[in-house]
Length: 175
View (spheres, rainbow, N blue to C red):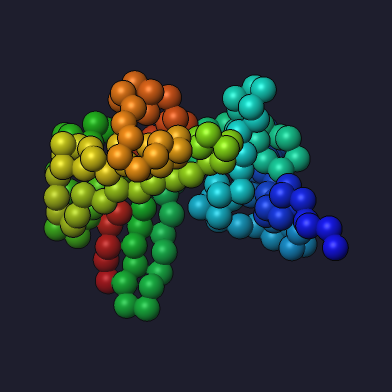
């Protein structure tokens, strides 16, 4: 009995663009091309080792901006509350969140295997952005993406090379 090939095991994804070339979303070609979330699509994208570009399963180039939150934001309805996510255009250090808001720092890394992984850091409801409180978490996530062994260390400039995209988001809870 033959073992399945590794490239057939992974889930596939296709980027969808409109006529002007703007990203509309991502589809799962193996499930009647239904649209999937950016979070699910990001896990299926790969880095082409020759061009160092993010690509879908069909070799189509995916710009790193397509990995971010849409400019209009998104809203999620829960049983008793609603959460809206909006990109933060200003410097996160100057933003004063309200008691029902939190700042999220979303960083997308390229792993040494060519995968794309995302890490999210929340600073807490009503808490100001302070990278000195969570720098260790960023360092751990970047090291994990690069395959640094437990207890090993790389200089920060080497860890920053693994960053594909970084964005700041305001999460507002209402209801």
